[in-house]
Amino acid sequence: MPASSPFKIYDEAFKEILGTTPQLECLLEDKTCPFAHEAGVFIPEDNTLFVTSNQFQDPADGQKTIQISKVTFNNGSATCEKIETENVPMANGGVNFKDGVLFCAQGTISNPGGLAFMSSSPPYQSSLLISSFYGRNFNSVNDVVVHTDGSIWFTDPNYGHEQGIRPRPCLPNQVYRYDPTSKVIRAVADGFGRPNGLCFSPDEKTLYVTDTDWIHGDGSADDTRASTIYAFDIALYSGQPFLINRRLFAFVAAGAPDGIKCDMDGNVYSGCGDGVNVWSPGGVHLGVVEVEGGVANFCFGREGELFILNEHKLWRAQLGDHVRGALLKI
Image (tube, rainbow, N blue to C red):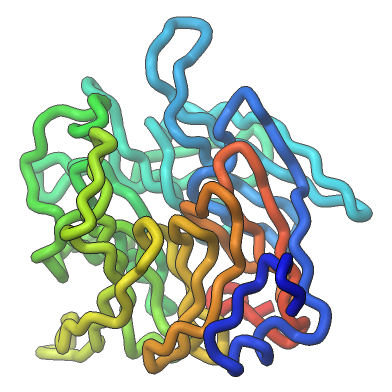
């Protein structure tokens, strides 16, 4: 790669992922709003992408708000429209679910958050699926992934209270599993500073969870706090899944690992302070798709496409066209 390339190679295996002609291009920019922060949910049926903004001040009332946007791709161009929906207070992470998007709703001072489902087509009807752990309201639900058995796994750090949008927490920083059929909710992992992104390996035998304790909601950062990806094995006991064999999978040198995804070969991708970092299934740091200002989240599109959320900019990286994201497998 030329010295000016945004693709930094740490291990020769990264060249196989990149293919012969990797590219990085800015698709959209909005200097007035950090529209491309979280979620990153690609809907292949209509070639659209749903993203959520970082918090910004609503010009109408001066209060902190978050915007959901829908990006439509058509003949090489990308257009962005603001989406209005009633039941997703302060949206954050998201994932494909049924015929729409399952959002993490952080909630507000007066309204609890939780998991909210929104249709991906107008009029974008939405409903809150769950907002508490047996009556104890969630802190500020952050990211979510869906298992092939239909269960929903999500993280719930206390960022919302630190940022002034949620009341004082009444739950630890934990990972949960929710069964939308039986309505059973279980805490499945604790002991984090700030649990954030999560994803399954392609065979769903491993769950990866990022801990972004390095940065707190008040903006303070501490290099001695966790900036770490943990891996857990998923094992059945008495017919129910448990997370066992917690291990440090990777420590991040630049910023903190936020959103996380796997490709079909089991490689692990995470949005960090210098861009999208990639590790082998064995934890070897393969390389970085460098993006100035860092990356909170991203998602795979088709045939090696990577849509990268960079606050005021949305980028598209083209990796090798053999690369497939483990979520959509396209």
